[in-house]
Amino acid sequence: MARDILFSGIQPSGQLNIGHYFGAVKNWLRMQEDFDCLFSLVNLHAITVRQAPAELKKRSLDFVAAYMACGIDPEKSVIFAQSDVPEHSELMWLLSCHTYMGELERMTQYKDKIAKHTDNINLGLFSYPVLMAADILLYQTKAVPVGADQKQHLELARDLANRMNNAYGQLFTVPEPYIPSTEAGGRIMSLLEPEKKMSKSDENAGNYIALLDDPKTILKKVKRAVTDTDTIIRYDRDNKPGVSNLLTLLSGATGKAISELESEYDGKGYGHLKTDTGEAIVALLAPIQAEFHRLRDNEAELMQVMKQGACKARERASHTLKQVKKAMGLM
Ligand code: TYM
Image (cartoon, rainbow, N blue to C red; front, side, top):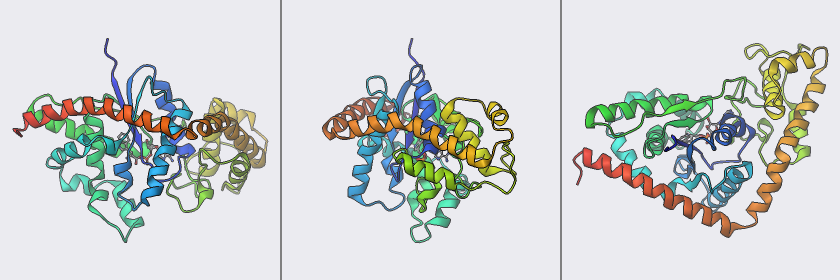
């Protein structure tokens, strides 16, 4: 029986961090066995913010190696760069003509980004969610595992699928988001500013733990994480965002439930929690880092994975695109 299709992607616009790992990649690994999966490096999304070309290319290879080091198996899943499948951009145009300005103006990520990049408020930043909808709809995707920050974009993809299906007949599968609860890592917060999301484009590297940070750096960053003036180790997002974030990280890295950790750390200090969280993250990342360095040394193999992935993705994407164009009366 054909398996349901899963699509997800990460922008190669900075270093992969543990927010991506807990928010998205962990679900990718869990779902890889049961779904027919496509994992993309969404480099066309990355260029909505200025990128140095040589750095973007290098980072794209880093990302392929990182996907594989985390456990994405190119024998089971399709790994490819978005820019290698031109159907994404073409479907985006067709969807753009069915997307209302008001829908895009409401996007919180757009509002955040234009506030941050005042010198480069480009059209791509605005239409970014339409490209994301194209990524998803092109493959008849059923499942989209992402972090909580992508929920609004996913809703647009669902609305567009329904709108197009109503206008032209059954063209697209309506995708479902798979988002971990906040407790389970759907929204990992910054270490120094725990009321803000952990982000790869943060200028201060002390705010995030990169997947490739060395053990000393990880321990140091976690030690410096902002907590509060209270002394109780308890999960409470609103009043204790820093401590709650550390509990989420420790729970994610050890597999222990937060309630279990709360009892275990009853009467212990924040220093203790930080040391254990840092060490648990180091232990989680050590095998991933070793595998990353092994894979990253063989660029030819990484290029081959991308090439094969793009071939497989294109075959499927072109099929959907052809149906859409035909239904819309485009020759
Ligand atoms: P991006 O590149 O910002 O992030 C990649 C994935 O990681 C999740 N994530 C987080 N999860 C928990 N806590 C955090 N602090 C955190 N930071 C990031 C994101 O939710 C995402 O799942 N627009 C997307 C990329 C994209 C995409 C797609 C995703 C383009 N096309 C199609 C799914 C399907 C983005 O910018 O993610």
